[in-house]
Image (cartoon, rainbow, N blue to C red):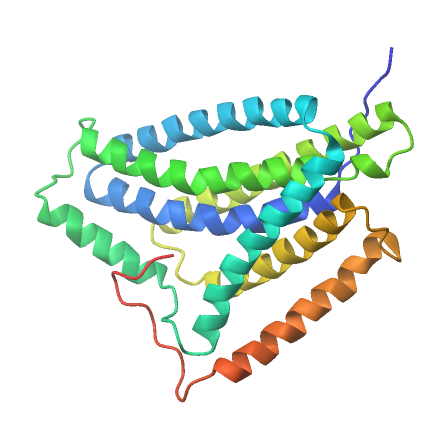
Length: 274
């Protein structure tokens, strides 16, 4: 009988933490709106239902991917998806830094959502409000699906292929998935705790900068894992990630300079999201 000892995968855990934190900040904005405008029971109920649904998704698809998809194919698919996902975030960040897209403003979005709820005539009562539950559920579910995707991909594309035996690969993969889950849970706990303390949008969190960093990270890891899926033996092994990240950082800086328009980027209008 083999004994599986948990050894943290710091790459999967930290990447999952940072990427998940971005999504939790956005979901928290809507949860706060519903809680302060309608009532906290409706808001928290919707968030709890969405969290339960997300836990099932991670459990079902995580196990399915491990059992039925060869690791080489998985790493290639994960690499391509992460590059596409990362480039999507990078595109928005670079357009904002260059002044061609308004900066994402959580406080403005919060105020717009609050005004919309008040315009509907929603009252702040203690009864469970269907609209409030659905609004909170939808927000947490949509943002949480991205967290689930991040957890599964970073977890299953971890260090398993580097192991010398099939058992060692299974242990490494399990550790990576656990580490990714822990990273996401810690990010959620941190954002939720901050929201509970201030009960206001986390406008001071440098979300655009965080999105840029996560975009660089997703794109870099996607390039690395996609290359391994294609059979590339990277020189320096995992350390090749440092020059890959450097290349994307330099490219991003040059792109911003080329796209830059006169004047500083303006804060987002209330209707601007994403």
